[in-house]
Image 1 (tube, one colour):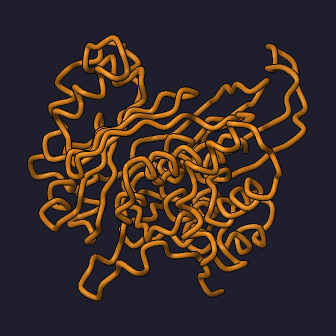
Image 2: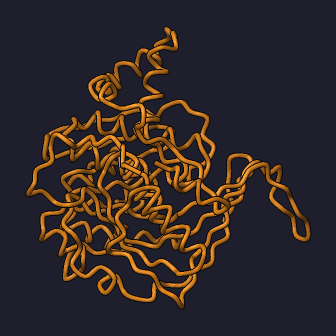
Image 3: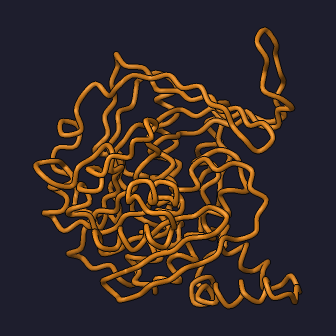
Length: 369
């Protein structure tokens, strides 16, 4: 099946440029998501769910989000040779078009699995898995040339002899995120790892905790002293950012949406920021596009399943233009997203959209494009 994805960077590509736009490394989980539960099962009871889906999760959320937005994406991860591993590999390689040349199959290692229960717009999860059988250095070797690598600051280091450092030597920009510190000690030394990073995109709680500040704005300023591109996401309050390379500072509000599941929304936001940065968009447009992409994901269940493609973006923009609303919020959206008028008309009718995938049918995977 030909790859009909819209390439938003087509006009910027050169024969001598990197093979990939984005390279990522991490753990792929099989996510099994139950939705529509009336209550969380009590001990000794059984509850029936209205819906169920299965999809690759973990680092796959980021890789799929980036690929659906048109970024040429490569992933290094361990995959089992069990049925779950077959499904995740097939979904990502054949269905989503993610390059897995730096990934490996392991016969004596079983797939990590997460079961997610969605109850009243909240979720509970149970996870089982084992560490990757080999180190990141052994798995990746010298990473393929890419415009960007994205890392978890708590797990990877952009300095020293790491694969991230090798990627930087080959010209990659390092975009970093960081997860919640379960110990809630927020060691300041974590931010020292930002040396060598181009961008840092924590959420508001993480940013304020690590910088020892009391407001999102002060946290942003503190982070902007460390990296050229600092962005802080703030949930229903939107996002703020400073790009020292362009001299821009911007903030955007969040969209009004019926949020169902936050799983993977941060990955979608990050992938959209990478796309906008590589495309050379103004900072306000980058933040607005990232906010829109994550808002589209929030309205669906299931991590990588919910990641929007350009077809979903086009559907939203066309609906916004034709809905006939006249309020100030609608007018604000039209102004904020008018940059889409130059992008959406070039999309084909086959532009990538969200997909439904389960283990039940191979046809589900083959239809993802």
